[in-house]
Image (tube, rainbow, N blue to C red):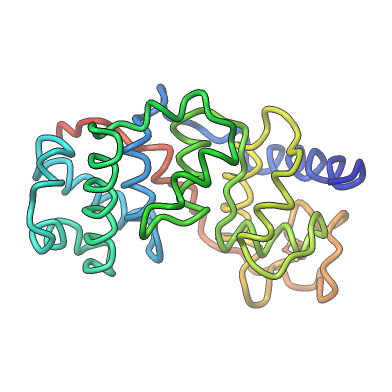
Length: 245
Ligand code: SF4
């Protein structure tokens, strides 16, 4: 990214923090395996449902070893609230089996010294794990300054004019070429909130958007001032090892 793009990322982050505040994070970084499985569960559903599915899975099985040895259909029944149970249970089981087979343990500790792109490349080589899931593991469980790109981040950064790319994975590569230090978590999390509450896919509410003065979206319409419900619960900032209740 060039200097202007980096400047725009910093400006966007500042304006979003002014509107939404500094997003809360997990008190301590969760285990990367927990995070990867939580992220698989979060695909194509909302954070409330994926949170329930993750909690059900943790309550049903004492550890990931038991999930690895469980029948896929049993995993599917535990996570059905998150939807796509067949695909997600298969992805979870495949990942645990492949990880155990290649490393001899259910741990991603070996990635702690890997460069970001190497770690993403290894994680996304597991069937059912894409670049978004892999980059969430790096940001939310390994504390790396990496900005994952989901559908909200892809749509908003392209509308704002920070990058120009056709797919989320292409946006990810452009954005993370030299992402400014320390702000990946706030930038990523607040952009998701912007995408859920204001910069919707259809009829974005530009009239109440904190970015309306810097956004370059060709169809920006500041007359639209519709308000939406606040939606700031983020599963990946609430992944825990154990659930008591
Ligand atoms: S000004 Fe409109 S298009 Fe631009 S980020 Fe805000 S809501 Fe989205």
